Image (cartoon, helix red, strand yellow):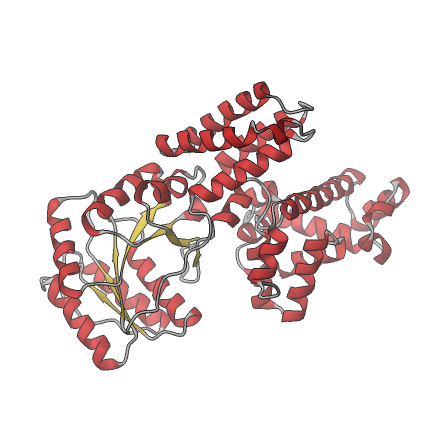
Length: 446
């Protein structure tokens, strides 16, 4: 996810780290490289221009110019602007309307529109305790209608019976009547798509909107298409007035142009992200968390939430406390490694752990699994005291650990360096206010 952009920004900050005091010159040089990184990530030119201007104004403030830590300050400003470009804070899908809430999903062919409808229905059912019904108005592609029926059966959500050649407006109207009569408090309409925007499609969607007056029109954007996704979204927004965006294939997007452009270009918030092909690969879009991951800081809050789903509340609170106090030990690290299989894709979860971005890039491969086994063997060869306080591990202890785990001293050194990096990144997260954010996310604070 955003690997190309992330690697480029990491290189910029690494260069700045050795500069000593911050100056107008080194900030200018760093921002020139940040600008190139964003353009290479296929971010909209206006978004790039505004991004650089905002960071530059903050970075050249008098307080910052007196700082001895230029790299830390620039990371903080870039983090803030990354999050802001993607919408700042997460936005909830507004369901506070008289039921049934009417949601029309639009987009081009191939963006993942039909699967997104099913994923959204599953989310509404499981996370918001709603009772949705689905309908397809894509009468031009029988395969799309059949796909929705199959997906509906998989998630246990009814799908209105519709057929090729029917009037799309009639199908949508019938779906609404069925929802009202059957006690369904949400109706989701999957619409036809095209390879590109055309007048016939827009006319049909405009008539559908007039017929059922939807509460939400959600645009499905393929993250892999870069800023073009934002341009297409703008076209739909001009004609239909979209209320939100579902960003698909985010897990495969190495650049980030769509996520960083669509919010600014359309003004519509990114509400959800598709993070995997499976039906559970769908989640609320958190701009601030994604910004942390882009900057190699992991995604601690999402990691905590996944932990909550698989462990009891007490363990989740304890993990949150240790993150906040920077008391995360090798013992805790080992527990998280063991939990990976319960918490989803290895790559996805490892990427949430600060300091393990490079390992995440190899994830789901044989090498990644071997690396995890090697780490577990190294940890298993440590004493309890060593796991609780890694600073006591001297040369003699490292040799013993290597011998006991069937690894080399170099392997042990690499792991300890990796663990130290994780702790340092956690300190950065604390400085960025993630501790307070975690408290709110877990319902432990105001």
